[in-house]
Length: 135
Image (cartoon, rainbow, N blue to C red):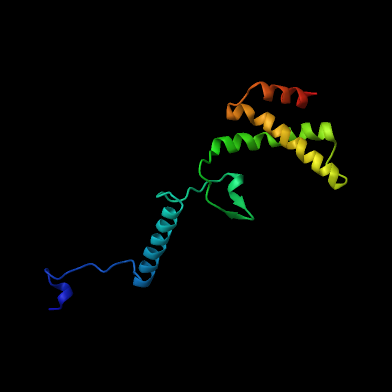
């Protein structure tokens, strides 16, 4: 009688082959990930999301601390409106670098004004900016 047919010694063959080196490497990578988290002052793994802000040069990076996906999506939705307002006031983005800098400054002003309600920071200063943008 062979050992694998005996009732006391019978065991099933594993369907999944395990490479010990792969298991050790995975454990080492997990240890490195935890150590990096501790260095950054966080014991949590980095958070990845599908926001456009976390895609840099075609590579997805971890979301920064305090990142809010809802705010990012709402602010990204305002970009096309801000471009229309800026083009209406400054003209298309064609010409010299002076015009490009002025266009960018005005675009930033418009984006700050449009996104102020998202941050719940609507105060008297932002109302004056709204008048400037609407003109």
